[in-house]
Length: 103
Image: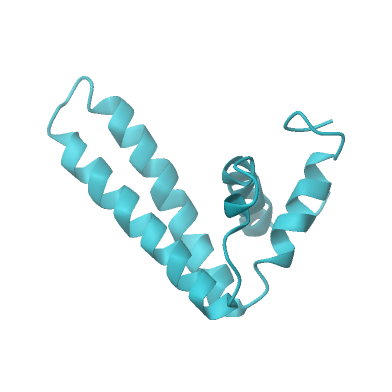
């Protein structure tokens, strides 16, 4: 069970992948997801170094811009519009995508 659902993590990723078939969408997500993750880390670090907050905000906007541009090519809305848990699945998809692993 993954994410409080009887589906396995791989089943979540497989469903996520159905909305990420267009090569430009895949590229935009390959770039955008780590930028969004970096923005979260920068935001946490900004507790100690306040000047990082601007960088965190810029990365957050840039990363999401990449992802929404990708979905414009895909002509499908992001999966998280239907279920917020896909916000977490995206990071796992990205790790699997860049490593070339398939579980």
